Image (cartoon, rainbow, N blue to C red; front, side, top):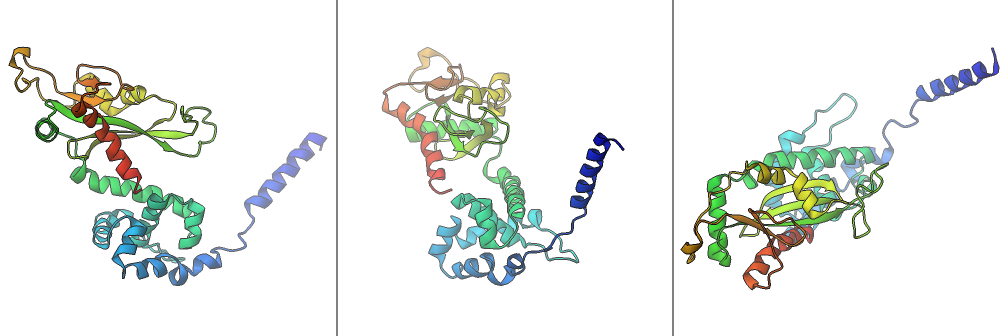
Length: 298
C-alpha cells in the first residue's frame, strides 16, 4: 500500500466511524419536559385567562386564534409515532405566530417552547404556508372585472379619485443574507432584504401582494418581474374597459389606472406622480400606510 492509498484508507475509516457514531442523547431532557414546562403548556394557557395579554402576545384575540386553528389545524396536524408524540396543531400555530409577532430567532423560540431548533424552522415554514393556503381564497381572492369596478367606485366615492384601481408600493423586508448570495439581496439602504410589493384598495385592504424579489431590485424591476406586472403587460388582469370621467365627457373614455410614486414606471394603466394635489398624494400614500400598519404589529 503506497502513501496515497494509506491516506485514502485513513479518511475512509474516519468517515465510517463518524457515520455510525450513535447519538449520546436521543431526546434532550429539556425537550422531554415540554409538556410540563414548555411555553405553550404553561404561559400560553395562563394567557388564555387574560384577553389583553393574550392579544399582546399573539397579535390575535382568543376567538381569532381559535378560528385560525380550526382552519389550519387539519393542514398542520402530524401523526404520533411509537417513539414520541407529535406536537399538537395548537402548539405549532403558537410557535409560528410567536415568531411572526416577535421576530425572535429560531433558537430562542426552541428554548422557550422546548422543541428542537430545526423543528421550529420546519413548523414556521409549514404553518405559514397553511395559513396562506387556507385564507387566501376568502380574504385575498384574485379580483374579477366586477371586483375592479367596485374598487374604482370606492376610490371615487371615498377619495374623489375616479378610475383608480389601487395604490401600489414596495417594502424592504430585512433578512440575513443567504449563503453564497453575493449582493443579490443587498439594497440601497445598506441592508439585506427581500421585497414585498402590494396593491391596496380604497378601504386600505390588500388586494394583491408579491413577496420574494431580490433586495437589490428596484420597485420598477420588482413590478416588472412579478405575476402582477406580467398580468399588466399581457392584459390578463380582467381590468374594466375605459370609461368617461365624471364631468369630463369631452375627454372621451379614459383608462382605469393604478397609482404609485416616481419609483415605478409610467404606463397607460399605471399613473406615476409627484403631484401636489392632495387627493393624489393621499391615494399614493395609501399602500405605504397600509404596509406600515401591518409591520407595526407583525
